[in-house]
Length: 268
Image 1 (tube, rainbow, N blue to C red):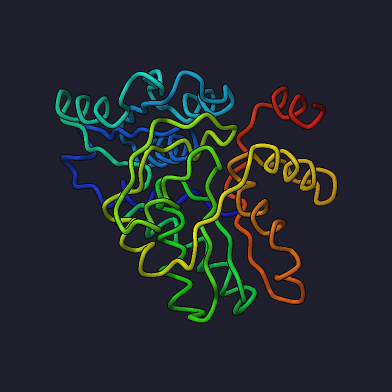
Image 2 (cartoon, helix red, strand yellow):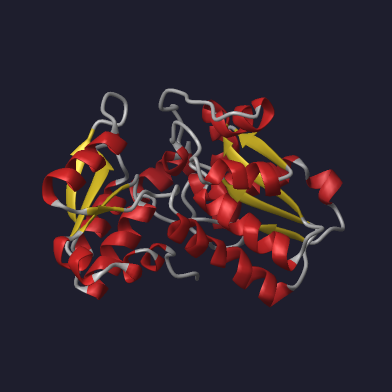
């Protein structure tokens, strides 16, 4: 298991920032990481989360001590809500991906993988706003320059793929997908140039492929992984013939899924 990377950001707060508190917006994984790290550091945390986020993510965030503010992801702007809260209460805003400390922390997932297993021929990671992918790509280019790096996003929300093809950040409406951790509307101003420089391609996976991946991981590897966490696996399975005989790394980015929802998806 890999510890959440978000503590890298609040641990660098000044005394004044710690006293005022932190605010973050997230569908759940970053939310939990910030809430937990803030509690460990004695920092008040306000977390903006979509009202339709998996209940397990909301409950965990509250359990870690975060004050949760809910919003409608299809009609409200979480970034603006976060900025307004920061300005109104003097909080420090830590976005879920477009922040140098956050993406550096997220990149340690790949760093630790490559230090443990050595060079790989290909690496697949989920893609939402690009923090995880860009951070991992930085580490991989330093440790295994020849490795091919792929970001994978939901088929319904391929803004990253379109951005990479067009050479400019593409903004989309919030996509309808099971991959709630990748329902972002655009890449970040920090993450996009890093992806352009270091990532070989951006692929997509359908919701049906994500459920197939969840079923495979549960049945064959005894792992409970949320839909977003299966993006990399789904794309690798699409390319299984060309990957045969190669050393492949796949990042499973989270297991925060309601058990009832998990059973319903796999039983459908």
